[in-house]
Structures are given as C-alpha cells and as structure tokens.
Image (cartoon, rainbow, N blue to C red; front, top):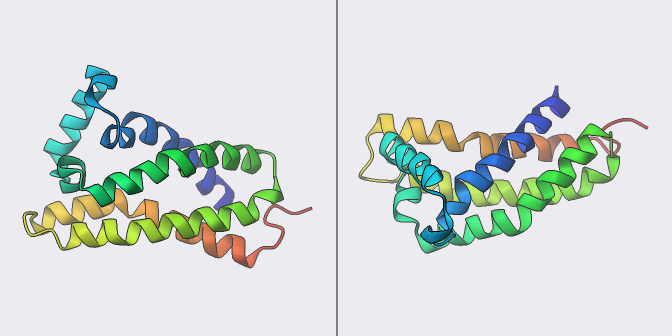
Length: 150
C-alpha cells in the first residue's frame, strides 16, 4: 500500500506544481488565463492567505518546490514503477525537506487571524497530505533498507 500511495502522491503533485503552485512565482503574463481562473476560483473558495498574499517566505518555498522537488517527482515515479531501491536515500532527503517546509505553512494557516475555524480546517485538509505522506515516506524509507525487495 505504501508504494501505491507514493505513486499517487507524486503523480498528483506534478500537475499541482505546474498548474497551481508555479503561479506563486511566475509573472502573470506567463500564466494562461484559464489557469489564472483556476487559481482565482481556488482562492475565492478556500480563502487561502498564502496563495492570495504570496509572502516572500512562501515564494521561496514554492521556488524550492519548482527547482528541487519537481524534478525529483519524475525520478521517484520512475523508481517506484521499476522497484528502484536506489530511490531510498533521495526519498529520505526529499521527505525530510518536504516535512520541514510544511511545518511553517501549516502553522501559518492555523494561526491566521482572518480565517474562521471552518476555513482553517478546510485549508489544513488541503495542505496536510503534503506533510503526512512525506512523513510516512520518511518513516518507511528509514525502516526499510531495501524498500522494494531484491
């Protein structure tokens, strides 16, 4: 079940990074109107203060996602689909990095004064898998020296 969960996580993270997250750092003139409308719908629906206000620290985190994590998603998918045990150490590095980044993101949502408890719960539910699944991956890869058998 872990392998299937990780495949789904990385496969879904690729379009999320390209279509939504990258809008945090790209100039608006490079974003197709249709994608801008998707982000506008998302921010109106969720009241996500990070995607609305785009604080510098959040832009830095998204920049790391695009530059460092995005290429890893493809390597991870390749390794997971081919039982590539070589992905263990890179997965430990990725998952520790992802978990670390998510702590201030989740904390900022929980401490945001302009959001209702319902808004916070909705956003926490959207963001938490990006902490929880990497945390599970970190534990899984640390505990299994040969994660996919020989």
